[in-house]
Amino acid sequence: MLHVLFWIIVYMFFAAMYSVKSNFTVAAHNAIFYMPIHIGYFYAVAYWLIPTCLLHARYIQFIGNLILLACACALLGRVVDILIADPYLMTHVHNIDWEYMEESKLGFWTRLFIPFNFANSVKVTNLVVWVALGIKLFKLWYERKQALLQAELSALKAQVHPHFLFNTLNNLYALTLNNSPKAPRVVLGLSDMLRYMLYECNTDLVNLDKEVVMLQHYINLEKIRYEERLDLNFNIHGKLENKRIAPLMLLPLVENAFKHGTSEKIGSAWINIDLEVKGDQLKFKVSNGKAEKIDNNTNRHHGNIGLQNVKKRLDLIYPSKYQFKIMDEEEVFLVILKLELLVVPQKIKQAIPV
Image 1 (tube, rainbow, N blue to C red):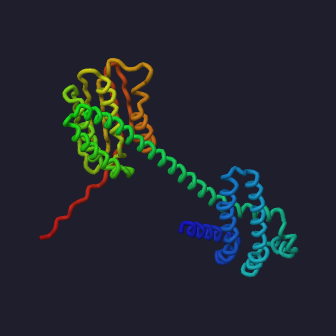
Image 2 (image 1 turned 60 degrees about the vertical axis):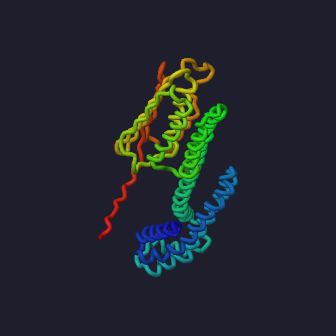
Image 3 (image 1 turned 60 degrees about the horizontal axis):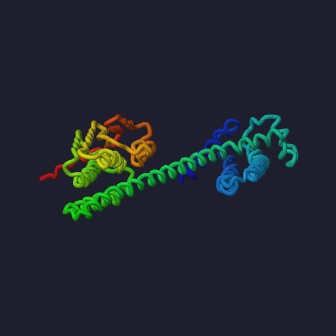
């Protein structure tokens, strides 16, 4: 449908352009006979030369065939000029230039290769075709770019699942070794989170309130493991309803705090989580105490898979719509994420007349 609309616009363009030297009726009549040349030229380049030569790096073959095709179409344009357009123009337009009349008396082959007219035919034939090809190539580039972005996003999102599962299964394994009665609760909580990940995270955006509930499930699982030695505060401010966010964007930040703020720390540990929503702006702050000793051979915080994952996803999903800060102090590790949420208009419930 878009192709048909484009060629209708091209036809109207040529009709308007040729009407300058005649009138719109004559120009509209003659433009019909040029259209098959433009259409054939475009589809030959777009669906033959580009796929078979250009995309396979056969540049010499592409250029050679393109020159031949351009000359052939220009010659066809001159044939339409000589056999159809010019006779119809001379019959229906009275104020014809004298030079034009003299040229019409020349033989067919002589007129066909008049340099100025042939060059003009090349120019007109290529004008519209390359505008159309420019649009098509831009569309092709954009679609490929979006496909690559989507593939990268899918890969990044998939990384969250094994990373989370690895840590949670380690927790479950430790509980089962001790025959802890808390193990069934961990299995049930893990089941709820996996259900959310598998069935509700397969979209670009999810409800913020559901994402927060999933965070609370995760926090509850971790609190079972660390019991009394963990001091955790999770504060929520603002309205979460009708707000949407990319799925699993917040979990790696909380997971990172547990990994480096509790599992590596001997004795008591603390984690503070603050989530604030004002209008369409989200501020998510996670801070934790750092372990006294960290293996010097690895940069655990800055090289963390979860935080790298979050940064890459933010760049792809929220370009220029987020702020992501990591502060690595001597005793505290702090992550602050600010981003713009999608606000979904709330549906107004209509009162049922009694």
